[in-house]
Image (tube, rainbow, N blue to C red; front, side):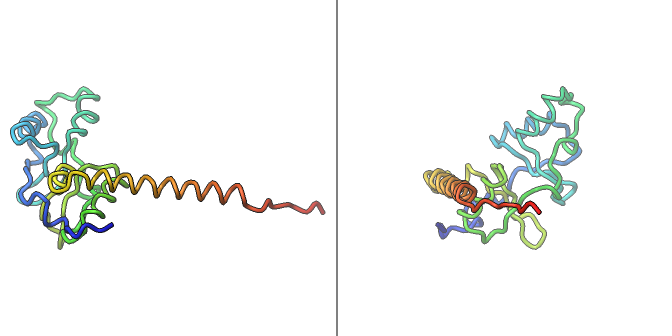
Length: 164
């Protein structure tokens, strides 16, 4: 179910960024000021990672790290571990990537350079029902796949071993 919309058409081309050496308190303030759930992390002009509101919950608050002393680099997901997409990928495929990897945002990378960021919020702005329809379709396919596996197990010929 391709949409005909490439990621390029709806991505944020200038996502909010922060230096990896800033404190997580500064990062939280920046997120609040810009009403975003993530920040692109940079060192100079180079994209080095991504920090999200979940990182604050799971890696800072849950571990009682001081917000005014912990730096962004300690909590961010480094670029090597980030799931990303290319600008010409269809939005439907981007939604699939998000669902398969349980993420809400994807950096958009081309030729090794950050071109933007696409989030579920971006998708919902252009097509509010698309995300729900796509998630439901993927869920139904997964259920069908599981049922087929169960059927294969139930109707499989039992194997017997000869006692010699």
